[in-house]
Amino acid sequence: MSDTNYVKKETFEQMRAELHQLKSVERPAASRAIAEAREKGDLKENAEYDAAKEAQGMLEAKIKYLEGVIATARILDETNIDTSKVSILTRVTVTNLGTKKKSTYQIVSEKEADLKLGKISVTSPIGKGLLGKVIGDVTEVKVPAGVLKFQIEDISL
Image (cartoon, rainbow, N blue to C red; front, side, top):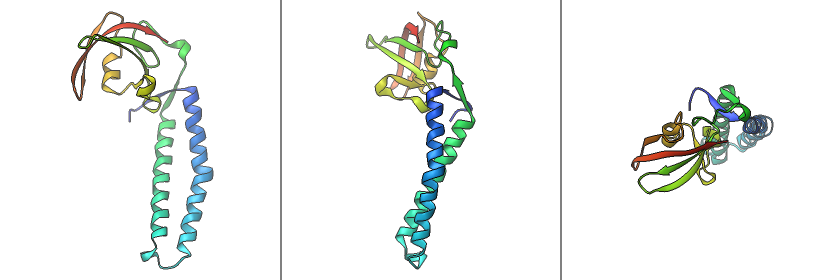
């Protein structure tokens, strides 16, 4: 996870709502499940107790993660984005010089990334390779499958 998490206002509000749900609804439910399992007898042989404790541990890890993301979040305003170069929240059209195939990606935070929707993380190899480039630039991006060469065709919001 990077030091700063750049997110849109909507994503930030979704994370806050999810954190509130986890703390106010799911955490008390996990505690009740542990209490109920504890009442059923010997804890050494109580699989229900072990499962409830494990679920509580995973819930607490998720709460801690969300608290960290929210604490380091920086809300981005799309009206202040510079489209003269590739930056977070810009939509960039590239040509893969190896296959001559054009693709359009939006550079987003790790939390918002969804390749099916054409949203790639700013911390992904392609995202890092495109950052700061301007129209006409050719960049080489090292990916697990090798090296890809992209030419920047267009940058927009």
